[in-house]
Length: 176
Image (cartoon, rainbow, N blue to C red; front, top):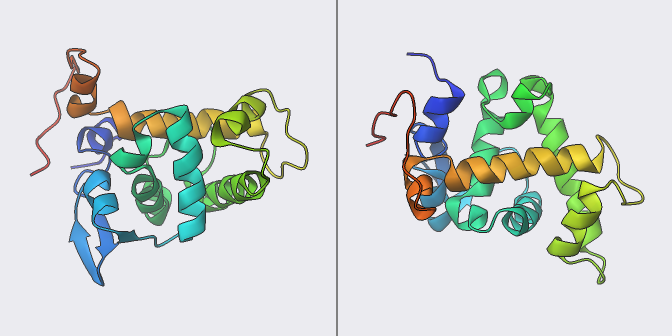
């Protein structure tokens, strides 16, 4: 059975994702992986923190839904990644560099005392940031926002939190 983006998101973001938790590989959802203290395999903990901070400002609830474990686990899949960047023209084999650059830019900007995540996203959306390296900030903003939406609300449970009926053409199989 091949994995589609729909199947990945329907499975709580990972379709039986495997995360490194407490020295062991464990099958879990991104939310459970975050709660249990997953160890990133591609990004650094600092990079994950920056993505979570800004991602949660973009989409409240993304941090608790497991945005960093979701992104890191998908990056570890290489060509099998189902991150939105793949569908926007970022080759899956180049995604690690894309997300590292995004996270490093966020780390640099968040280190400045005048920048809060909320102020930063406003400047990202309009490409108003100086010294931004790599793809345009507005593009990175769009990609991070889409990933945050996917992990926070792209599942039947996410729809339920919004009090919206989940009406997928193909209802996802249960994860467990």
